Image (cartoon, rainbow, N blue to C red; front, top):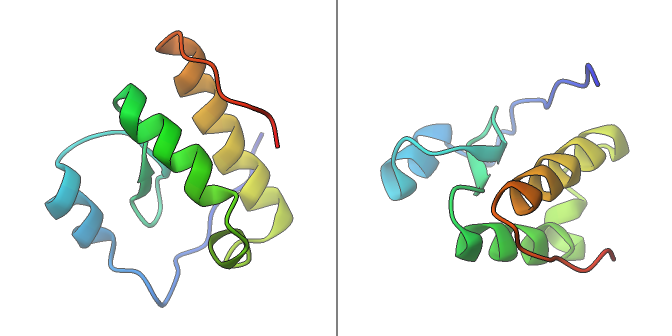
Length: 83
């Protein structure tokens, strides 16, 4: 998948790093949706399904973010519900 997530004007990527540290993010461009712990993975999955969050991304960007969250869930052996 060669989709690139665009830099968002409404987000400061440094804020994500400041808040969560040097962790993996589902949105690596804007440092949104940390996926380093089971709790963060579940939260990321929940938040990306909120219409106001999802609407800030193009459909291909959204699918990439969801794919990264699914991969992280699999690696941490946690189940997330497909929505």
